[in-house]
Image (cartoon, rainbow, N blue to C red; front, side):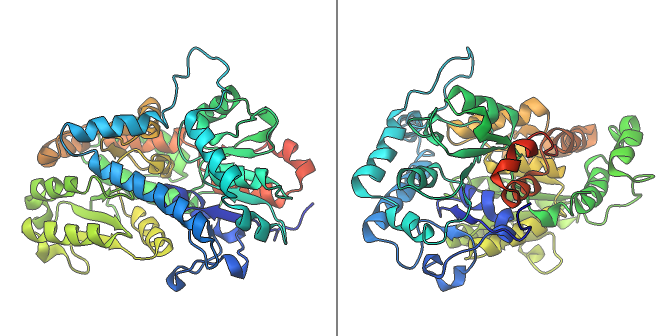
Length: 461
């Protein structure tokens, strides 16, 4: 048995929120060599950020910055009438996910994959990073495929694990020589496990772990915190008791309580979160205007998630003021804005806010997996092929519902509440989505390589 204090190099990239959020729950097993700490003093931590560390080569930095700026620019440009859709469709085509059926061999490398490998092979992109890690090799976990490719190409001397961030993935996530690659994958759901096989990954290199969720929202393997939060959330989500009247015994059985509460421990709360590019921030304006009266009457609380972007935070403040609900933007008021310059601090604030969130409204990004916390997802329009598939996954398990016109949120949101739909979606997310991803990954890292195959048969759902 390996030491239970075994550490790993946990590596993400600062490109939106998805890749950082995916590994943030693994920070307890993460360690970082001093030379690979973030170049920004306010972002100290043990998770390695591959595109932002003290001694990063200039050429590497240029490649990373160009990729990030292109994605953010195209994401925002998508909302420009007519022309935006055309530009986005061309960009999205390069990273599109092929239809799953009919099942067939999809191992042939795509143009996007060949371009990534060209940068690695011809520019030594990432070589310094891997050389530094090879001085004291530990298991490597990354949420960005290019880093896994770098590790394999430059001869990393320990296990390489890649955490998948979506409910389906493009061919770019798997190395060109997929059948011989030694990269192992943590799959968040069944579809990803099967997709990896179509791309040529050997089944022994696939671990169906579930997506890593924050421990502070779970409460151990018994899910004490999650069950307590869901216990109160169900009360707010079903004011007319339409769902509860039919399934109360089943709900109580699974939450291990004798009865549901007579009153929730927090007011009805809607949390609206934008992505890293901030492209859908305008939806917040319509939400605030539509729900103005209900906010002032204390019938609903709104949390706007600006993340780590100052421009989005400033926009949200202006929207609150123009919607005439600025009086509620105070401690204990019915409007809150979550913002932190440091992404790690943002994730901590966001995870805390989720405990008193009843409805999460966001595009179907990596946050789709947070429905496992018993959160119904109101889905903003997807951006990119992977989010289209995330949306399909949420709909398939009954945990996500497409938003209606945000201008009429006060009508359709409360119709959904009164019908019990959102309570049902919350329970479906809790029942159907994997909840133990963080614990499963830690188990795999803690155990020695020869024990992993046995571990694969006992991972918790």
